[in-house]
Length: 74
Image 1 (cartoon, rainbow, N blue to C red):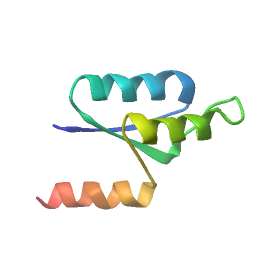
Image 2 (image 1 turned 90 degrees about the horizontal axis):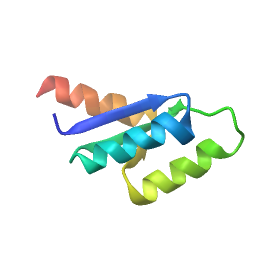
Image 3 (image 1 turned 135 degrees about the horizontal axis):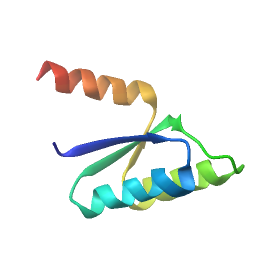
């Protein structure tokens, strides 16, 4: 295992911290853009921008599904 795919409903808490923990432990974090959210407007987009710039990859769901299909075929 070298990659962690991250989803969740508390962007500023669990999603962000899981992403930071994954990179700190040597994993490649991928945050699924359509599978995260937060109850505070604007928090999700700001954190997605920051995570993509500093910690991991932010990818659309269809890209992540294709990645997983490739892993299953390998």
